[in-house]
Length: 196
Image 1 (cartoon, rainbow, N blue to C red):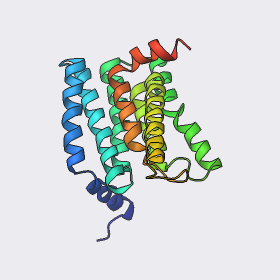
Image 2: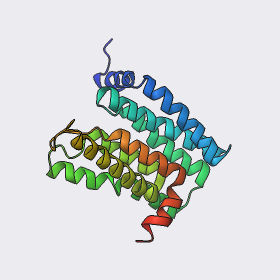
Image 3: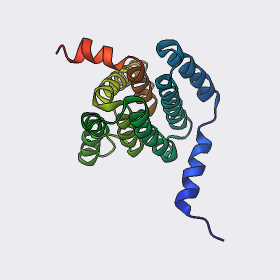
Image 4: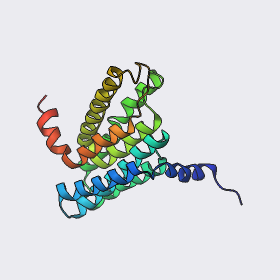
């Protein structure tokens, strides 16, 4: 009996997740979701979303990959969350579909134009997370994640731990931005992005 190499790779990629980084930030994610949102069905979905983000970040830190199986689960969680928590509406469908493409497609175009601008895992992460969050959350998460990664890059340059050609693992920063967006995205969008 032969095994499908693709399904085997999906499972193998998950081995890059377990680490002290994952367990510490997973605990922080669970506490944050219930502290900010209280105990509700919505908070359970956000908690699961945050745990998947932490898994993506940990895998990227540990092995330089973003596991596709985690991204598939994240996208499915987004669809279920939309149907169960938000309730189906045409406007909601449009909002979440735009969320899946409004950041990921520009990232893909940049990656095709500028070799190595973004990794495939980062692009897929933004698509799956955007499907969960909708376009407001995707924009807030991307802006925060890129902003924080930019500061980290400058920090490395100042300390001469990197050069202008060094690559930064982006998934941890995107995950942080997307996590903040899941908890406070509407407030941040209304305060900062709508204002300008």
